[in-house]
Length: 430
Image (cartoon, rainbow, N blue to C red; front, side, top):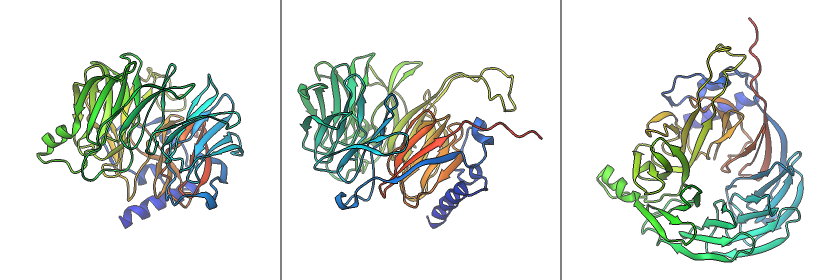
């Protein structure tokens, strides 16, 4: 582990300085040989345009991490971000200055949801409540108490909000008033050890279903209008069947991810002990499973539309590059892995050093990934190679948020960074 730690430190130092081949340093296990457009981009791709201390040290509540994820409102140049000082901040996207701050009773380690129609912001707190505040002023609209920390992003479907808490409850409320739309559904948490964190809700507008994953290993599809169960899958049983032993950790803590598949609409979920699964969204039937990609904490679907080849690359004037997508899984044990969404096979994998890795965020044709001990890295989605990195001196457990050429993230020390990435530079003529 010491060698891995020094390796990542070297990567970060090279990114901040001038010079070494980052793509060759943070290599990991790769299967896909395709060279990404980013490969010929010089080091220094990431530029810091905001660097400020955000959290108030006198008001932090003993948290060693800053989690959650910022929410960007590009139309009004605002960024909403929670922190361990028990506040939700509204910041100016250009310079990171504070517009307002709303304080809760507990730390705010969730990803907010901005509602542009109402100009509302919905967010959870470790005090057990979901809050709704006015985005312009930070004035409270309502507070919905759930009894346990709310750390995943709410999902909006029309006039409904769906969200979960850490005690395995799923809620449906009116987005304007906070009144319940159907009784909260619940599963008793599993006995024994559990991984920290919980899954969030996902909504499928095609099948009108809400999906929720639980710490006892179950994934359930609910009727969005009534809350009635439409199907249930026990992934802990799948994990036990694959390994021959009862799994130690049953948790399915990743928020389900929806996708269109050749076999129809699917939902991707990750069991900590059982790996990554693709389930039929309408019935819950298993489409595929990868029992090697264990320990998942986040799933992301990366998509690249059909496009012309890089005009500055060797394929200039060649045929159109076909559309491409990958299921990306973050894990402190298996590493950051890209899976084929049609078969579940591993396309590439980067082992990570000591500590965890955030969900990867699509950013300017690349992926932006935080590591809980070693900073922020820009990676190629094609093969997992590192393009650039920034070491702020403390780790990053918070998932970045990105829009167009800018991204925002807060370090574990409460330091806000705004990161800009320009498109790849033309290749030098030889």
